[in-house]
Amino acid sequence: MGFTCGIIGLPNVGKSTIFNALTCAHAPASNYPFCTIEPNKGIVPVPDHRLEKIAGIIKPPKFTPTHLEFLDIAGLVEGASKGEGLGNQFLGHIRNVDVIAHVVRCFEDERVSHTYGSIDPVRDAGIVNIELILADVETVEKRIAKTEKMLRVGDKGAAAELEVCRKVKDVLDSGKPVRVMEPDENEKGILWGLFLLTRKPLFYVANIDEGELKENKWIKVLEGVAKAEGSRVVAICGEVEAEVLDLPEGEREEFLRDLGLTEPGLEKIVKVGYELLHLVTFYTTVGPELRAWTVLKGTKAPQAAGKIHSDMERGFIKAEVVSYDDFVKIGSIHVARDKGLLRMEGKEYEIKDGDIVYFRFAV
Image (tube, rainbow, N blue to C red):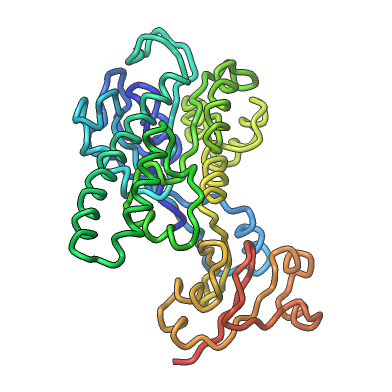
């Protein structure tokens, strides 16, 4: 699995429309608040042109991309952290995702009501972000109270944890998400253990109108919000993405090109998600199958082998590695070996994006 992406935002901003377009699902997408109750889930293959290129060269009987999961989470409203709307149950769903796609409405349409009566990306993004911050404040205040008790009874680790919790509380009280913090190595473990919503990487999805694909006045406004947080904006027209899915696969690229688009929304989101989560992709041929795998940047060869099977990590001997670019130029593993481009790497080797790897192990 590549990663799990939670789609959040105010009601009626187009979350379910975008979810359906990205996943080929048929979740309800209606013009009223809270048409989504339980999160809709969709698992989709990650578009991977490198995998297709490798497959075209070695022609395996089977090739398998990595996958990612989308969760379409019901709309948050002002007061959600205190139970308003559908409240805390949906805040709980956000805790289970790796990265958050915050959909913000950037289109005018009289047929689709707006919860707050007008289009205002700064206001709308702020309402949702404040609710996430308030939920984290409640979490941290409870943890501070508990840690203070532990400190009084002589718990040696409580002092360090309390210091981190108070730093977090100061950041949240200033109206900023926890992800703006730059903790040192000692603080990271404590911070990660708090399971805070605003620690998760987040990017904005500007849902725009088909007539404004080339220029939309609201996108620059939303980009200002994102820049202040060190975040990103992906512009998507939910309706266009849905139209693309209705076309035969061979016609989709031309359709997008005619609209002035270089890639579908799914590919945009995959790129941003991988960047924010610091993920890389490597490839293996196990038996008759060519397969893509996703790991964190910096993952060492034995742990990457463990993604395939625990025996491979336990019995790891070495990894034979060729880069994607070298393989495509040469077109043969045997020639790569003869030219010295198939490298022998040991336990300390960190997997690079695009590596084609042959793991050697013994159990």
